[in-house]
Length: 64
Image 1 (cartoon, helix red, strand yellow):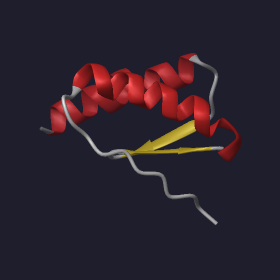
Image 2: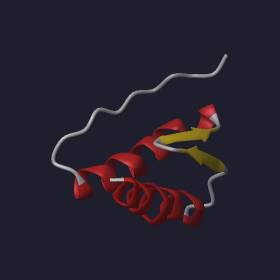
Image 3: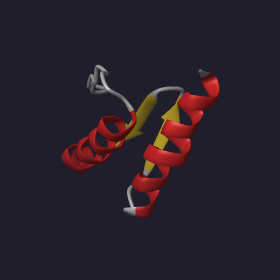
Image 4: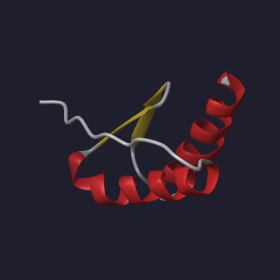
């Protein structure tokens, strides 16, 4: 499972976010990003997860 998580988040999500020129950090199954990039980041994350998984829960918790 850890290998699959790493493949999805590092090789999939993180690579696409960096290729898009976004400043992001990942930690396990989380992505930290600027609020102004939220819509674009969510689009990329959902596109990868939709391709990789049949079901998932995506949540957003802003840091205040």
